[in-house]
Image 1 (cartoon, one colour):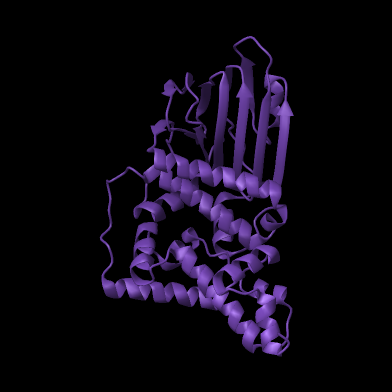
Image 2 (image 1 turned 90 degrees about the horizontal axis):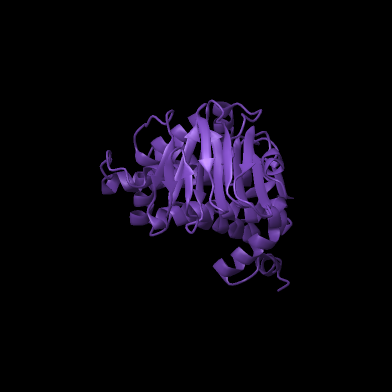
Length: 342
């Protein structure tokens, strides 16, 4: 299991930058294939590990990884059983999820099976015996950033500095986390220009932190904050609406909204569902879409791409498809009707 050495970005500063919309450190994307165990370990950027092949046969490894700011997402696929040893970086946490069919592996003395979430970090020693066929997806992130995300996800602070071992997840929770990680890798490989935008990167980083925090707290009932009253729900949605209207091009993720509004993810989602019938990010997207439409219909002549960018849509083909699905016409058609050329 990969354990990252600290990236050059300072964790608390990077968390603040992501939530404020500031540009994170440049993203890098790599996909490598190796035919020797230690060579596979060496391909993992900045990680110090020792791999030893335990079973006879031809070895093959595929490693995909994307890094932006201080969050590192990876997928490691290997053949042959391995002994992986190393040490986790202080101040960082790694979470990894093997494929549900990965059996016969051990991590920190715990057997891997089903939806096992592997946890290591903050200077702890790493000891893992992989199955003959391993497909592992995970991420490494700063401990302060994960602490904050967990507090926003659960509604109370938690101590994660001794996070270690194996946690068994419910299938729905495990599938959601794995899908989020694989989506990041797939999108970064196919649409690299999307991730080069600072708002998209910061929003994706927040989404990954929240996905990790949700997995860690999904079955934790120690704290359930009371649900807000009807008036409080309406006020919360109104405050969120004001934020989006004021800075429509900001990378508004669920984590960023929770941070700015001072509420947990549960409170935010409950309030939006009750007041608007929409999930928070669906509401944000609708507000932005309507902002673009109003600007195209009423503002001075301006290219569609420039108007869309002002409202946080930086990938024009994707925006055009979403706009058409939302309003039943392309943004260029809206602009043409305003000009009287349609």
